[in-house]
Length: 379
Image (cartoon, rainbow, N blue to C red):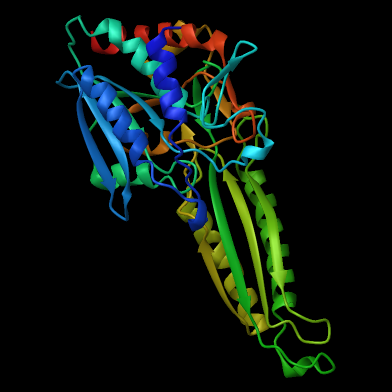
């Protein structure tokens, strides 16, 4: 590994960029994208910072080298999950190299990818580019995916092929599930528990609604199945429930939060509409009001079969396309018309937890792979 690679890797880790739905710990990613704009700008890339429309303190970066149709996008997110430094065996905001590993928050997921991209492209810039190479760095993937959503809303035309460098152990991923996270709130009327007629029990209505959701889950699992996944059916998880305030009062309010993991072929708008249609007659029978709202906009499932990029990456890595359970920005880049694949260094097994690391034996193979992709699609 070169000194430049280690320095950039460490600089990226040193800039905290937590994204979270909890406002008190949410941070800007501007220092990270501004650093990347500087280092890629020094290599001759044309860099454009795009503030998010609803969060101008956060931004996406599009760095372009060369011009013309086609080309290759190397994409990643610049934010990390929250962290508790007391649980780490090293400084999470510094590069620590030991035991043939590079430790630090975002080392695998996924700031380290940008340092590898930088190292990979430098030796190639003396050659003539026939198609553009684009480095895409997004905001807020770990919380709302608002960075990728903004690109779709803006209709940004980027390259023909896109590789998202999430930690996959350098194995090509061409399928993942989508996710919805939903909140159901039921409002009844409280009253003295000695006479049920004095109120409308929100908890009893919720009990029936939960039964309907579980029945709906069974219907989904009969209707959809994908053998590419270890869990080959869609799932619906009841995550948390809160309601009422005292055993001698009729429960006047109750709230449930749950998620749905969707297979390719399922659409979030259709799932939400089906759930709402299940809940409405139950609410009517119990004479309660309900609201059914997303905790975030959700991410669609992703599938990309028989694509040129997939075939190239299967050949270069020696691994066939695989599926994963976690979500990525791939569906959004697909919406922009790109042949998209998820493929990067590191392991998802060490992401989102203390002592995250990238194994050193992933570094040079990743650089070699990235150089092969640039030669294939840009030179």
